[in-house]
Every structure is written in C-alpha cells, then in structure tokens.
Image (cartoon, rainbow, N blue to C red):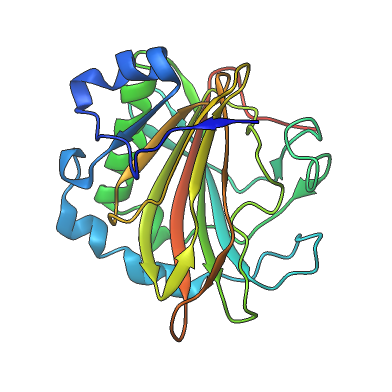
Length: 239
C-alpha cells in the first residue's frame, strides 16, 4: 500500500534547485514560466497535436491514443537522429515491451522549431549537464471519443532510461488523468493532477515509477495532450 502525499500538487521547483530536488526525492515539477523557452513560440506548436496518427501498437485494442516519435542526441547542442524504432524490454513495459514499435515521425515543423529544440536541449542540460544523452521525444494525444482514455495502459512503470520529462500541453473537457509518482524501493508516493499548460514533471527513472490514471469525458471532444521526452546516457534502448 502506497502512502500518498496529500498535497493537490507539489510545489514548483526553481530551476537552480532542480538537480538537488531530483537527488532528494526523485522528481521535480517545473512551472511553465521558469522554462528557458519562448512561451509564445512553444504555444504555437500546440496545434500540431491535432495531426497525430493513431498508435498502431495498443494491445488492449483501444483507439484512444495518438502519437508521433523522434530521436536525438544531446552533445554540445541537439542533433537529429534518423527515424528509428522505439523499444522497451518487458521488464519496463509488460504490456508493450519486447517488440520494436515504429511510430509516425514528428514533423519538421515541430522538430526544427527553435522553441522545441531549446526545450529538449535545455532539459537535458538541466538533468545531466556535460553528459552525452540519447533522447526520444513522443507527442501523445489521449482522447475520450470511446468514453475512456488511458495515458499509461501498462500501469505504473519505469521507462528504462535515466530521466523522463513529461510536459502537459493541454487538458480539454476531461476529468481524471491523475499523475502518480511512487518510490521504486519504498512506500512513499504522491498524486496530483497536472493542469498548467507547458508545466514539466521531471523524473529520475531509477528512483521512481509513475503512471497517469484514465481520463473520462467532461464535455465534447475531450483530449489530454502531452510531450514526453526521455534521456539516457549509454545509448538508445535497443532489442
């Protein structure tokens, strides 16, 4: 039984304190206003979430998840990597692990945007400065057209990387979608609902596991859009 914290949302962590807070508790929440990214340029990317193809690999036969994927290397700047498969071992993803999953690539209009590149490189420098990082970015849309949408159908999990950044892009006409972060080796946990557009949850993937509860409609055309960026030191996860 996890001992959840009672705060509706953890306090936002100032950028200079992020590294220390990650070491202390394994996660940190960063406010949109503190990101070193032009807010107007970042918001201009939000309509690209309207153009995500359906995820072809859902093993629960669901039709609620849409996504695009891209890979990069952070090493004295952000460097593009040719489209490649996304892979997780089954020990990290019991539902979808063990197979190579190909997703539609993120569009150049997004990956070439200065705001996007600054965000990916800047978060990498924040969590692991002076380190070469292998990065995967995922645009996700979860909708409620069928009644229920599952942001993490695999349940509470780790991603098999060093750090995870989860940015909320928008919540529209949905209820639920509670974020839960658990100690990987202890009883502690917190739960809260991310509501501020472009706020970012940073996770030390070795120290915590995480999940987001299902969403339900709270009006027409309910969606929850996120950008998930993973950072790994020793190469990409491969079969």
